[in-house]
Length: 443
Image (cartoon, rainbow, N blue to C red; front, side, top):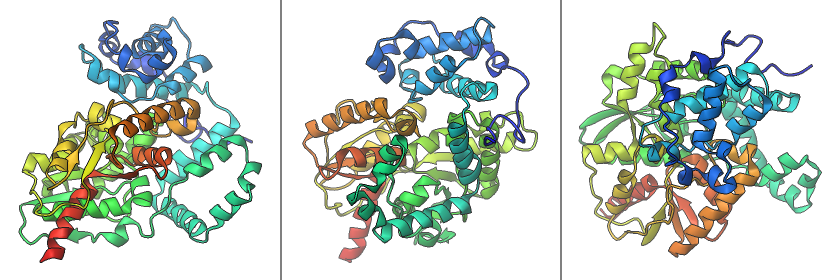
């Protein structure tokens, strides 16, 4: 007996082809000019038209027109796409590729053409179970942390125990993130107040960010406090739903969006702060995601207006320049795809870094070229992901620096795995928090 797919059983299953029900003008926007081609990592790799944004849009349009059936080949092509949105930045016609991409994947799942028992199991376990139940996800994180703390993972790796696992799991094991000693709720109070208050903001702690980078959530809170923000952090926050939306589980993404909106008193907050580039890009689309929800449509639009990336918010409100440095002289910056291409937040992280005294920012060649993380792309497409990571690591080496900053948990983990001991991976907000703490220490 197989596991329930996300498009069947008790879950909502749309009766019609989702691409056919999409506003046709969205499909018609593409002019097939080819400006997107040199920006698309998969097209650059294969030089095949179907692996390009305009090639994929042509396939989507053929499905919408009834000229092409949704097949396993169509599914494979939609999931070969990174969803990095570099094509949106390059597109002169303003094609909303993110909407097309997510709709196409949702149609793949509705049609069930990519289903098999192994795939259904992992999708059910992750999307249906772990990432829908925050306390269960944290419980799994505690178990993983205990495993790592005892050193069993290192010992079993030393005796090559993991060589007995299936190849996919064997390849993934070294990429397992180190779980934080404490999660965000233990590090950040539900309400923290600065000495002089100018704003009141909500702080999103995320799911993977909470498990692996709760210290960065603490850094974010400290930076907000140092810039006059009262910080409200709801307890046991849910996943934002980006993982679900990008993998065709739209109804689950909507449910998670409702939970997030209910977690915050929107009227009392000046902004809702996110520090994860990929999450932030999705968080700013709740208005579209819930546009036909009679109970949440208005609040979702209000939510969209208030969600701000941490770097975006700091520059918008006037970042307070610290008096001390962060103990780092030279850094480079890798741009999260969904921060720069999805949210169009490009200069602000650089401005945050440049506000730190004594810090020199050396530009990274192809800084906005995908590192290959792309959500779970490094799991589903390990070969292509590895090629992109190798390209990124070589570009980092060309800068000559030993500290790399980024602003997304997936990118952070991917870069750390690729760089090993050759360079440290951190985040702009962490360096800024460190500079503010140096001020306090010097008093």
